[in-house]
Length: 94
Image (cartoon, rainbow, N blue to C red; front, side, top):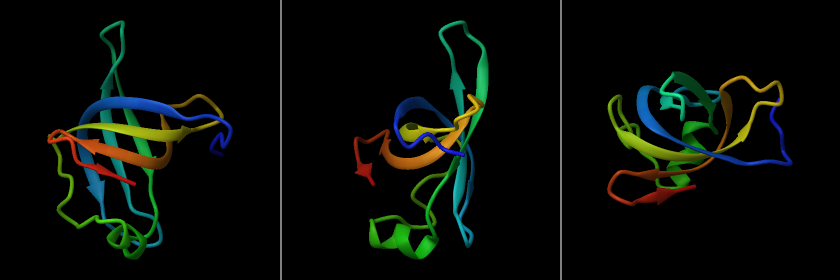
């Protein structure tokens, strides 16, 4: 499903954040070089594991500008498995 051999960095605006078991997730609206937007679906770990890495239910919310590093989907669709995020204030979380 995810390409474990590659990473990709995307920048955009959070449109949705789901703090749920078994995997939290969020979506990011990314504008490409051609001006077209895509919604990237990012799968994360469990809320319990995210808390251990400094996350809270309120860490991100719709409208937040973020930079996200993911392992992209193998099929080339806009999505991936979460590696890290950099928030607008420069805070980086793994």
